[in-house]
Image (cartoon, rainbow, N blue to C red):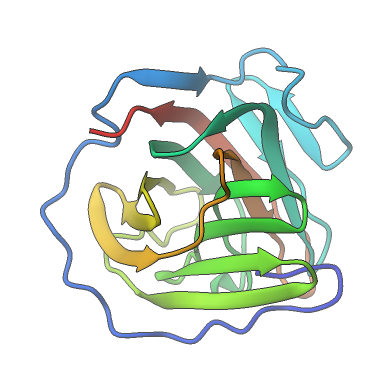
Length: 207
């Protein structure tokens, strides 16, 4: 995932054989945002806009923008969001997805997807980006303006990523004691700015 100083290189791993598709989130809703009106728990900047049913990230060229809600802490949870990039020319250079196990702006995990079909789990630890796992999945829709539903299911120190209801990977991580915040992340191409829209963000009780 890109930062203001560098672009993370994604290395593809062996694709995990997917399970049968399932609906995103089957547990009781613990938090949901339809983004029809601004919630003070989310940041509001020139690069983060809320309204008309979406939280929209406008990352500058070769930079990623993050937005997380600092009002609610969760441990085990099922987190879902629908994401779309409306325009791109180099799909291997931009990605968007979910942030989770957040303690602050320099400590969190992400599950993100690229419009070329690549997915990745990464960890931000201070100034370091740590690649956990990555690969390719046919479940990722690759067209301009396509909507992908991204989901992370967290139980203890285990996280599982789904795209459009299809399981792509499971990993073991280090969740923060007492729970963490959740949010979204989106980056732009190396030579042009892109726009990411996130809709129907929800956190459900893990079943």
